[in-house]
Amino acid sequence: MKRGVHVQAAVACGITSEGPWRSSKTPGIQQALSLGYLKSEGLYSLRDGWIKVHFPN
Image 1 (cartoon, helix red, strand yellow):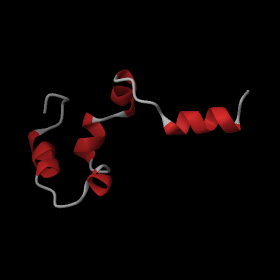
Image 2 (cartoon, one colour):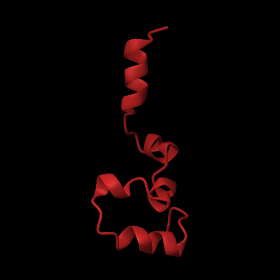
Image 3 (cartoon, rainbow, N blue to C red):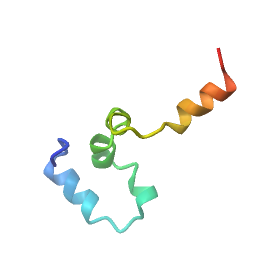
Image 4 (tube, rainbow, N blue to C red):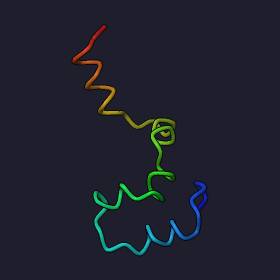
C-alpha cells in the first residue's frame, strides 16, 4: 500500500494461492513493482541487455 496500491488489490496479492511467477501479472503487483521502480532500485533489465547485444547500434 506504501507504493500506491489500493487496499483491495493489496489484499488480493497477499492472499493468493498462486506462486510468485503467476501472481506477478496481477494489477496490484504490476503497479507496486513497475519497471520504473525496479530500475530506480538498480535492477538490471534483461530485455534492455538483450537488445544491446542483438542491435548494437
